[in-house]
Image (cartoon, rainbow, N blue to C red; front, side):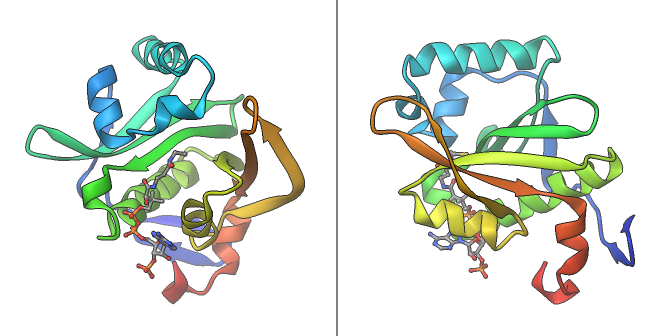
Length: 172
Ligand SMILES: CC(C)(COP(=O)(O)OP(=O)(O)OC[C@H]1O[C@@H](n2cnc3c(N)ncnc32)[C@H](O)[C@@H]1OP(=O)(O)O)[C@@H](O)C(=O)NCCC(=O)NCCS
């Protein structure tokens, strides 16, 4: 259980586990569009997996049997900030509460780790992923777009502990 300002939230890890190593194949099974999102996408992914193998990044996920079905890859930015560089649920497991379960476990970890800010960038045309994060107490940074290549602009969404503490318990 974690305390943030005037409220308590239940924090169990449930099915969510830390992942210490990841293969390119396992990652692409969960996030098939990932490498299309970046110029030199394969190279980008290999660097992220190398970061993970050398503790410059961390990952949490949900598996069924030996198959990974949800994945979050995160890069610390200093002691109190984190970039959520990938967050994805395998396509055939979407809309079943799995993304919500993974994000809730991450929020518990961020509170326990005294993280002040988490940001994620989402393709400006990807309304469903944007809605998912907005429904999970992330807020869009207005008028900021990050360029990831020709015709590819991302919105920036951020979470802070204060955003969680403002939300009524039944909305979390
Ligand atoms: C966005 C994503 C993570 C949501 O995961 P999920 O397991 O399908 O979501 P959940 O079933 O846990 O839904 C949680 C909430 O998110 C919202 N949501 C999920 N999918 C949505 C959609 N397609 N449209 C609108 N809202 C949606 C809903 O508010 C839902 O709440 P509800 O239970 O009240 O309906 C998943 O669809 C995904 O992996 N998309 C691709 C993400 C991507 O491109 N990642 C790379 C960039 S980081």
